[in-house]
Image (tube, rainbow, N blue to C red; front, side, top):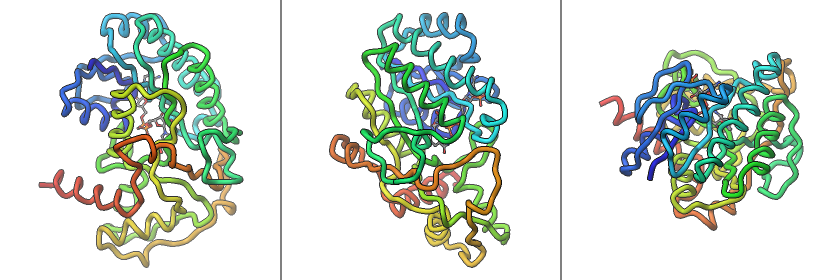
Length: 297
Ligand SMILES: NC(=O)c1ccc[n+]([C@@H]2O[C@H](COP(=O)([O-])OP(=O)(O)OC[C@H]3O[C@@H](n4cnc5c(N)ncnc54)[C@H](OP(=O)(O)O)[C@@H]3O)[C@@H](O)[C@H]2O)c1
């Protein structure tokens, strides 16, 4: 299969490119500011409609996975014009170019499309974003549905993985670095989600695109946990001192963008449909430990 991935320098896209190449798929890796480690590089800004169309027509992939996004929730709240351009107009550009070549399309959305008042959201629950980032992701989902007939919308939640990507450490690595340096780590006990190991997300999305499954899928971890409990589980798996983890309240913080209180996802549809099942936190963290140990060798 010829697979084009946007956001291939990011936390999720880089892992997807790695696993897809391991399975002998031909990968076109779209990046912008950061370098890619796998695939045939295509450097572009998704806002550039003409370049997007030209590159996608030239590569002529069978499948396009669109993960390129302005992911910083607070920056999106502050710079709304840029967030709209990248997240909504960029998605329109990639989706329209995909339509012209008749490829299958997978859009990577987010659990943040929900307001977080209920938790354990199913694919059929009504989105109600409370931040501008989430609003742009929901608008992008709607544009995908308008433009294409053969698509999948995948919704992960707090992605983490073994290596930094796109110039950033992720939530799990941030906690591990702090604990290894014997620093205290403040963590919310009033924000719940379904943390998602990038490897697991990449495996699930690979299966979705190989089987061309259409519709909306919650593709996240299978456990609902608060940030603090996730960190406790992480410390346990890595044999680190969990007394450095300090419970704090999100409701006591003032951040530019609001975060959902409980954006955890119900993964039963993915569990029933996929051979690559969503992972419980303990199982995912053990896989993370193994990945980090073998990378350090
Ligand atoms: N991370 C999470 O916790 C989380 C949770 C739920 C959903 N998601 C969704 O999952 C997807 C992947 O997230 P991630 O954490 O892997 O992202 P990430 O590590 O922040 O990487 C973002 C990617 O988007 C690319 N990008 C940004 N602006 C671009 C532009 N104008 N043109 C072309 N490429 C551009 C970046 O390229 P350069 O770095 O090369 O500029 C990078 O490859 C996103 O759609 C996100 O909304 C993420």
